[in-house]
Length: 433
Length: 142
Image 1 (cartoon, rainbow over the protein chains, first blue to last red):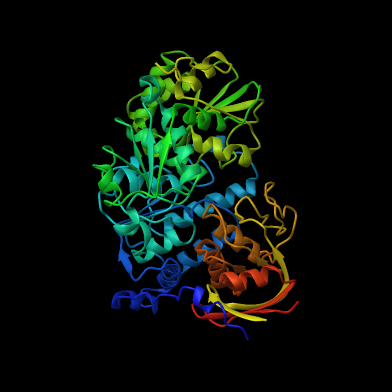
Image 2 (cartoon, chains in turn red, blue):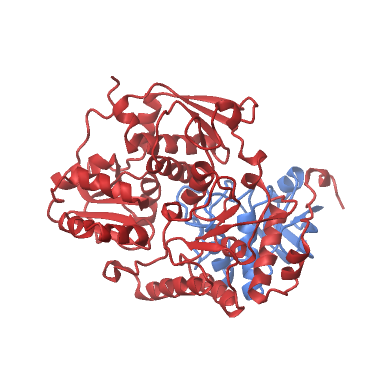
């Protein structure tokens, strides 16, 4: 027997449990909670957590159907009398429940997708069906411990809200919700949230600085360079939540970024020094206008293909984004035969209805998709040509998931292109003035 | 040659190896019905993970890989064991869920660098993980 490299293996830490946690692990909280506790404690050990931490909320992504295991697992929890212990929102499902006429693909898979959504609702989760739970009322606050799934939601919660979550996903998200606990490790702790990479932007031309493209391209570039590390960004003086959403979603697609700081903008970065915990970053990465233009160009996979459709709202479109969309359309409509999809949460759609905007948008040729998203569910009608989007996330996953080519551009470029029926570029956007 | 490692999940296996030259995301990278590698950028494209001992440094990418690994195990086209060089909670979770739902005990073990290198050069391995969280034993059989 050779035991030569035993020393290289970190010894498994023992997670210290409270009496309440030991009780649910022993089955005193019912079968479902026991299964959840078993998975959670095991994951805590794998993450190197010394203990669990109580959470105030959860966001669950397991409601998206992948196959029979999705159903078997949810059913086991429902049959075991599972009920979430904290306020729990649900991510997108595989079908649009409010616009059933939009759902395509295999009918059996659709039925299963719908059944899975029902099962997660039965566990006491709120049927929010959105990947942007941070757009809902009662979102978590600075310093609160949560367990969120869905990479864009995770990075937004950590970075913009200052709430604390690690990267959770299938199975473990609902396990956290059912136990009301998360492993105390990584981004749950002060130490894990400090920036180690410093991205320093050159002066950005004003027009670009105000656009959505800057943030998506920067996020894409950061994801590529940062991997799993926490970056801090310096050189941006103003950003809306939608722009920060675009940045985070992009960085969590091209990389595994779960948190970023932006000096003077995000709540845990009043200064560069504080974001880094008064330590020198391991690397300072200058970002030039050329780097950003290159990142944006990387997101376009299409060559000379004609424009086939436009898709926006990945992550889900906010009310403010619908306001911009209406302003850009300026009473015009999308050219005949051109599909224009906007994915959003059902809560935002309700707000559109209240404001009387739903009819305007329909008349302008905009198809609203709720409860799911065009990049992961068969929603879009057969498309002749490339799909244009202002979402780096859509551009990253769309080609592989759907076998389509992508044209990446600003929301204004998307709208103008849709109205004209052909690719339109804003010649001023990247001009260095 | 026998090595000790960390057992992320419980189980035993004895099978031929498939050594992956690059990390893989099961989501989008492995077909859950056939067990074949379908990631067109992966060097082992087309190889099958079914019934073999999968040797790879670490997993990659989406947390949905837990689901896809569990689907493979449910469909009987999952690996017999996974040998890693770095702990991977996403793959371990897929195996834990398959154990919980279907009683499939697929061991996932993590080895130190030298042991991993020896196993990556092996054609046949035996893996024994008697319980979660304790030492696993990996034996090179050929």
